[in-house]
Image 1 (cartoon, rainbow, N blue to C red):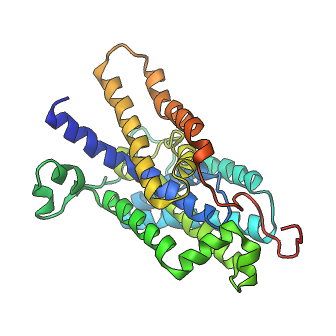
Image 2 (cartoon, one colour; image 1 turned 135 degrees about the vertical axis):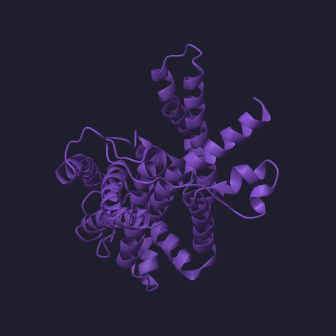
Length: 311
């Protein structure tokens, strides 16, 4: 590839990594308190559809982002209530929320907008060059001439790393995911910690869904997430539930996705169905190679009951 092609490829990789980062970091945040969200795909679809509708009706992308975050927050509240208060199996309620999210993402646009010959469109995000930095050869175009959501995803990863490893609240959150009984004995409110992490994490997942019509298409189409929610769950495992390694993994997953599209456009005779499989096949291979070395919170997937003496 020429220098221009490499620059374009890397720039597209950073553009494509954003939904992976928001969704997987949201999954990681919840998982650090022991709750594994498996409804990412449904939450992303709901965030994409409702965020798009609100943005379309109000003419404001900012309001659309807030709406997508609110939708994710509602899903998170439901997840927290059923798993933390009622102590329902996390995977069962997660799958239920996935199907619910997928259902409303199909129903709501048809109910509000209806079936139209011309798809409704919103204004997609434009690049915002950072003065001086965007003029740096090679790196300037890749890193500093992106849309605001790219910058936000990088900042989010940095802030989450600092929060988890350099603040008292982050330490308490990690302790809840490792040993909630010990955390409870130290006066940490395990339920409140779980509620907060699940709701904020789900809000990030909802924003990840809205990023797709906000940047890629300008409109909402059914099932437009195309498995990115499932991949973000795998990415949390691949990244060892650490913000910085999840960021690197998101870059890798995004590069695979961009490569698949590049090869498809090049028309080199490979069936496009095989190219669409590349991100998922690479995920399976990576998970097989790294699963035994991956570290997860000790209490991940388990519900906490302070009266349970077996903990």
